[in-house]
Length: 76
Image 1 (cartoon, rainbow, N blue to C red):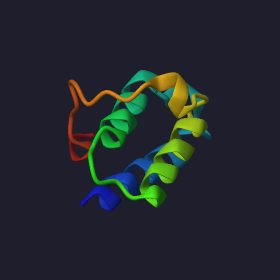
Image 2: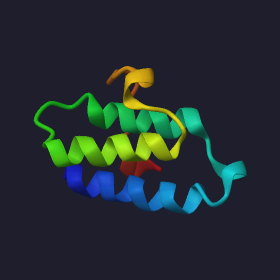
Image 3: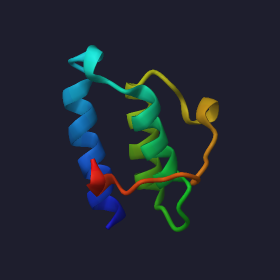
């Protein structure tokens, strides 16, 4: 299930990075942070999520991981 959510985030962000005016950085960053806050993520999944944060112009170290106020990615 996490892989599917990460895949959905990747697709959405890959489209949005070519249209910077459409990016709601705080929203997308919070979605990624929610996924990073989950236990049991594989190293590959963590890398994929870090790459998505890089696309948004932020690094995982700058963001801090917090799973509070998370909304499921499927509710996009």
